[in-house]
Length: 327
Image (cartoon, rainbow, N blue to C red; front, side):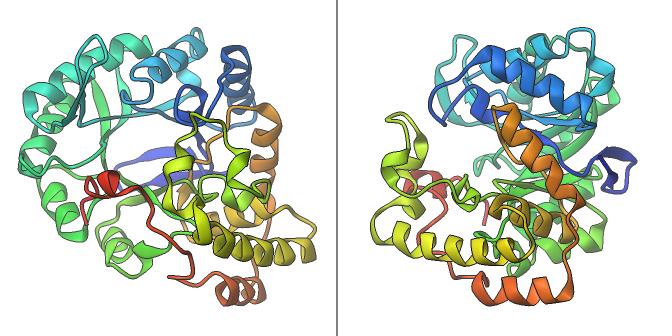
């Protein structure tokens, strides 16, 4: 697996990381044994960046990673997130970017992850009631204390990035980026990251699985799969978006690759570190193979023709979650 320097502060990660959320929450049934085996296989294949958050479970996903890294901590770059409040017994409390909560949450994450430091610590969502400077200032204190190595933000607007970066250099901004979601190319986020030397980490690079080509009906989802509430997977939106997937599949076939692999290769070509989520080894192997695919000028033109910005129908999240994005 090729390595890439994320940001300008010296953090080196694999060009593909592993999104671990679905191993514990939001995407239907889970299997701890297979999840542990998937993490171990990722490390064996040179995937170093493991992405989690205290809200995934809550806490269960961090605990899973802590278990998986027993005796292997030095092989992994752990990225986790704070800013969505939970009590110690798992009761949700909304957004919370207050310094005292961030300090408490980090100590709790360290216990769950069974480590003495987090490599990359994100503010998961910006709390509109707390200036981002205060939140990042508290995170910077954790860097000074040796509990965190590098800082990042998730789902933030250009001006928020600038304000945070002026308090402490940001290594990464994590946001949704894929053939289904190209907004950062047009809203100033990507340009701001390039200007300031901040790395881009792309979550949901497969459009929450839509770009895998394996989803043909909303009925494919388990009853507790959150995609049942995702506007892009509902009604006429689903049908329109499936037509885009069919076009991506056609282009992929000309290169003898899967739609997933083409979509991932495109994200990597755009300079992002991708963190496709999977909880099974067989999909991990398929994703890793995408790192060897060359995207040509002709490929880019063909992809832009079928998946331009704005082609996808439906919002990224249900209305209540859209309100948490710092646009």
